[in-house]
Length: 150
Image (cartoon, rainbow, N blue to C red):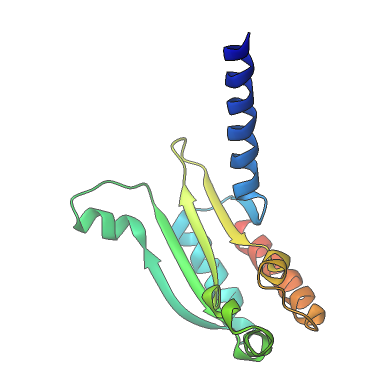
């Protein structure tokens, strides 16, 4: 009986840890390919005056290393007018800025897009006095990623 209880506890812990690892993420299903999803996001960012810092093609890098990876790309972008006040409040938030969005194709061919919730950054780095900035980030990221995935 003790062995069964131990196995049950391990199962509960594993499932809880898996959900906890993703509870700080917003994950959306995309109607487009990985490249198209990030192209659409890039267009939305540029139209709002938000700078694209870099685009990383993880699948292309894997291929160069002789490995295989389904389409997976990361878009890094930011607006110093929003990010700087956050870093002034706590310089360590710069570990997560500029913002990043990951798009990937799963084994079934479905494309997904994910990013960290701004409120997670606020809580993780205990940023005080910047509620308005985090609310704006949340609103803008939701709108931009909705446009990119639909």
